[in-house]
Length: 565
Image (tube, rainbow, N blue to C red; front, side, top):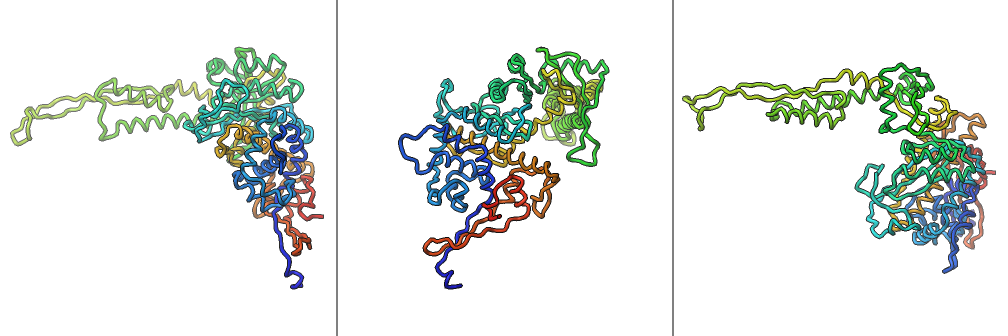
């Protein structure tokens, strides 16, 4: 036996979650879409097709998120057949080739390709499009990006420039990234990248028009944050028989009118939702009451007001905290040892500045009182001695006090916990409208995952074209991630499974994420024993955990890639 093994070699390559990703890419026909839409390369024969290269990059972004220069090393440790590669093609995937693939993707009709991809996803996975949610975020850059094409040009990549940065980095440049998801598993159905100084209210007309073309009609509910609430945006949707649901901004006149109306009228609030506190299980349930405003918006749309018990407590605590901070600031200004205020004006302006800083002018009023103190001073200059004469003088100083306006506090307390929604859907009840808007955090979660889980950071790319292409691929990544999660959870419900033991120590997960699905499969290897001549003697695999086998069954992934019968 030892002599037989003397001239042999062992190859060990990781299988991991690559077959799972490849199955979902196949169901989306991503490689075929690339072949259909990417322009041909007339200059050179391709040693490695660009569609295959882009699919490899998508897989890497899902599983490892390596920098482009580290991708060949990552591939060298994995089974190449699961990427559609021959063993000798792995070394071809250098960062220059990946960059050229991104350039080719930019030249393609990415808008039409996005439509075809989403249509395929909707049909293959039966995604419901009756309700869709939109939100925007910013992708931050630290480079100069000076030599960008003029903003007046039509066919140009989005401009990386300064704008309202949602990462709280106003010193850095950015792009605006808009995404729309379905209410059926938060599956992304649209994305677009805009100039960094594009405001959120300018993206909704284009987004809604795309969704109408995708669905084939306007009979779906479009949900977005308060930037949708402009006359132009709402009228564009309503005039085309569309339906929308959004937040009424506090700057609108309708907000102030209702809060004033509430001070003088008793309203018929109805309980529309009750749910346990997700963070403190021993606390009382969170209760939502609702009422429709007797006055519609200026454009004639319904305004629905809600009162949250949790938000009411938060608003009250925030008001008390602001007033406490204001009083603490004032005490610091007048602490012993600090120079006192010598004039009424200086004292009043100092107190008012504290109130403005803490935004408590509505609840606190400045009161200034004069204080007279006696001091003794020498009648003549010089060093004091036994015969020095003194005279008594009165020194007037001013002290600032804050008086709480009880009427204003009581009036605002009556409005604690309020938030308004506006819609043109006459058929939505108070309960239904709130339930539909409560799905909005799921699209915000997609942004959070884009920045934290996937670590979107195209700052390694100097070309705005390649940046635009990479962000398009990140949409594909988010789409696959959402479809994996949706498929697993649907199969769990269909089979009556409450949990899957995917966490360490066998702990269960009631709603598995794509990260947990991939992690339970990562590290699984395929081993092959070869003769010196290259003849394969034997192929064997690492043993799969029970949870991994269960996951493959739920996702209908062929177990042959993992050595299963």
